Image: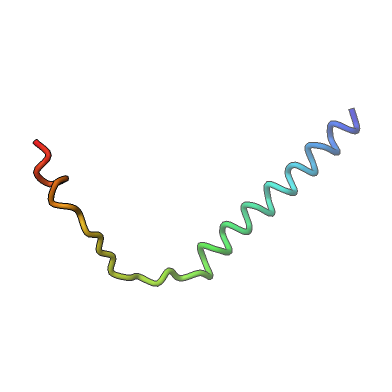
Length: 48
């Protein structure tokens, strides 16, 4: 049983680190908005 507790403890610590990393990314990284254009061929527009 102690090995199960040790395993759950390690998994909990790793999950907490991942969670903390995600929170840090959301808090500290600001995305740069850019305009995006994509050409669509005329054949795809008239495909009826």
